[in-house]
Length: 181
Image 1 (cartoon, helix red, strand yellow):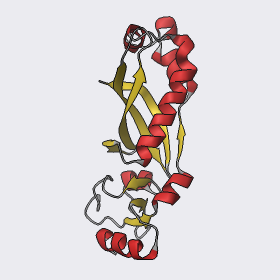
Image 2: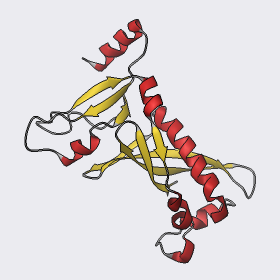
Image 3: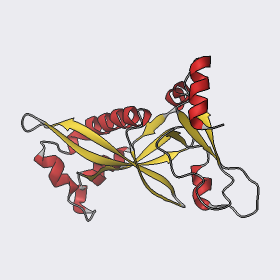
Image 4: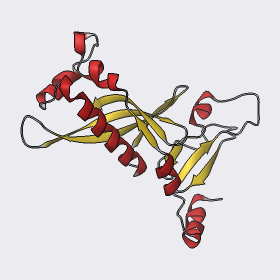
C-alpha cells in the first residue's frame, strides 16, 4: 500500500502510521549484507534509507504506528563511551574531544550526567524523526542526532552532533558522544 494512502486510511481508522519497519524477505540465496542489517529497524516514514536499496531488492517497508515505535524504542549508551573514551583517560585515544568538553566546564566526573542527557535527547529526537541518516554498510545504518547541553563554565548552551547505530525494533545505540559541531 502506498505510504500516503496508508496515512489517509489510518486517519480514518484512528492511529496514524507514520513510521516504517524495514523487512528483509528471503526470496533468494544471495542476500545483501546491508539489507540484512536493516531488517527489523524502525525509521520515521519520511526519513529512511532509500528503498528499494538495490536492483532485485526483496525488502519491503511495513507501516507501523507512532505508538508502536514509542512503546518499543530503546536507547543505549555505554558508560565507557564517556569514561575513559570521551575524556581520554590515560590519553589512549588519538582524539582531543576532552578539550571541547573541558572548555564547556565538563570533566570525567560529569560522565553519568552526560550519558543520561545524551540518551534522553537521543531517544526523544529519534522518535521525533530528528536525525540524519549517515553511512549504511555491512555493519548497519548510522544516524546523527544533535544534542544540546548547558555550559557549566558560564551561561549558554552548546550543541553538537552525536553518532548512533540503528538496530531492530527501534533500538538505537550510541557510537560516539561527540561526532562534530
